[in-house]
Length: 250
Image (cartoon, rainbow, N blue to C red; front, side, top):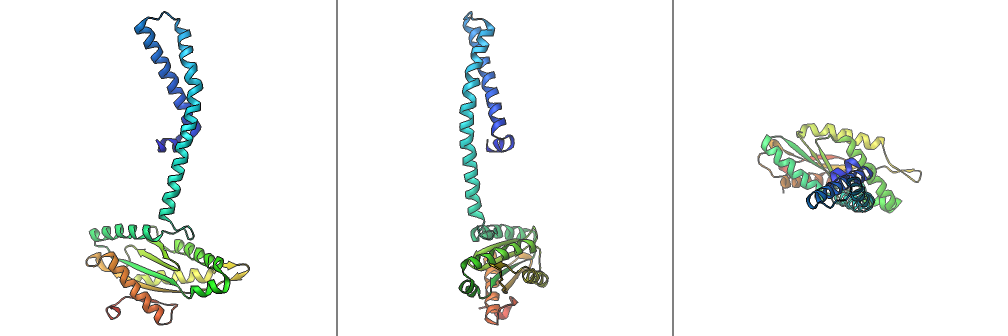
């Protein structure tokens, strides 16, 4: 019903309901007259049967359709809040991981290699302390837009929380990730956000993990490896990317 409302619109659907109501009322009246032989003139009977629904149906259907539209809009808003981060427009943590698990299961069936990248904005607290939280929000919003531009339609990007983000790169090997990271950094440098006439510069640290042929590792383990690599990137000076290897296992 909601799909019909979206396609036809409130006014068209109200007219359709009214027309159906009038036709049904007239048909029932004629059947009643035929069965019980009331003797009333046919034309008069038809007019009388049509008048009532002609006035009542538009009022009732307009009200009920309005409630249905409001309910549909509220449900869409709730779904959006449950799926997307309201600041960056990216997937929120819950929706991101749910989608990543689905893609992981698909990768297992197709034996596809994928990579997970965790991104952390370096010294983000200093941005909040120096420029204020509104400026920090502007940085996060700007970075979210950059992630949307850099990632492909088959990839996923989301905000894990705070200044930490996650990217799922479908059909991508670890050796290919550096090109994506290079483009990401270039986009950042070319699009530093401006807050109250001040350009705010920032850098990022990244941890990369690969699930080759998606054969042995679950998504959580790949995510954990990317987190270990990110820790190493931050611990070794930040503003760099580190790919997970056996030496980082802990």
